[in-house]
Image 1 (cartoon, rainbow, N blue to C red):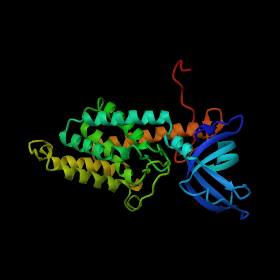
Image 2 (image 1 turned 90 degrees about the vertical axis):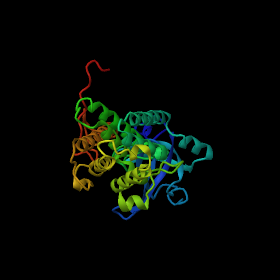
Image 3 (image 1 turned 135 degrees about the horizontal axis):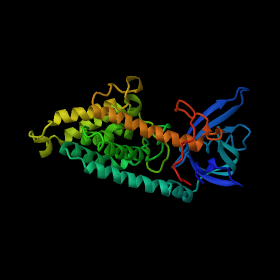
Image 4 (image 1 turned 90 degrees about the horizontal axis):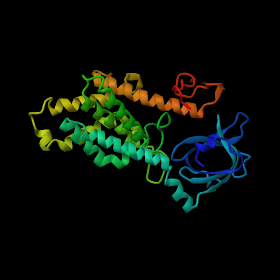
Length: 334
C-alpha cells in the first residue's frame, strides 16, 4: 500500500513501503523520549511518532535518514500521522526495486505533463524565448522530472514541479486567448522558468524520494538561482544567429530583462520573497496563475486529508487561511 492508501482504514494488517526523510529525537511533557519520523513515498508524506515503548525503538540502525522500510501491521494515517500496531524491517533489494519504480498512474501523468511542457515551449514564436526555453529543457529536463514544486505545501513530491508547470502553461495558454494584449511567448517562457531555481532547492537524487537540501539552495533560494540560470543559458546563446540578429524587435537585451522580471516578481509581494513587485501585465498574470494552481492543489489535499468537522465542512489545513467547505457539484454529476 502507499501512504495515500493508508488514509483509508483497512480491515486487517497491511504492508507499506516507505523511505525515511527526517528523524528527530524529542521528549514528551513527562520527559519520555520518542522519535518523530517523516516518511515519504512516490506520492505522499506523513509523520510517525515512534514511542519509547515500541519494541524496536532502540534499533537505531533501522531509523536512519534515507533508509527504506517495510511497515506491517494494523495501521492507518489519522490527524496526527501514522498510527497503529506496526512492525518494521528494512526493505529487501527486490522491494526497493518495486518501491523506486514509483506509482504507475503518477508516472504516466507526469510524463504526459512533461510532453505538454515541451509542446507549449515549441509553440513560442519569439525565436529568442523559444531557443532559451528549449535549451533549458534539453540540459535540465531530466532534473526537472525529479524536482518538487515545494517542500511541503503543494506538489511536494518527486516530479511535482512538472505537474505544476504544465498546468500553469495550460492556464497561461488559455488565458492569452482572452487577454489578447498579453505577450503569450513571454508568459509561457516565464511559467517555464519561474521556479527553475528549485531544481537546486527541491530536487531528489536518483532512487530516492527524500528531498535533497543543498548549500546553494539554502544560501540563495530559488528566485536568485532562477535568474542566474536564465542569464547563463542566455549567455550561451548570444553567439547564435538568432540572438545576433539585431533586426528582431524588441531587442534581445530587453527581451531578457522582461523574462528576468517575471522570475523575480512571481511571488507578487516583497514579504513573500520577491525582490520586486510585478510591473507588467504578464508579471501579474504569472503571479496569479501560480497562486491559482498552488491553491487548487492545496484544496484537493485538504479535501483528501482533513477531517470533517461536520458534513461538508473541513478542518483547516496549513497553509490555507481557513477550513474548507465541500465544493458545489456539477449538475447531474454522480
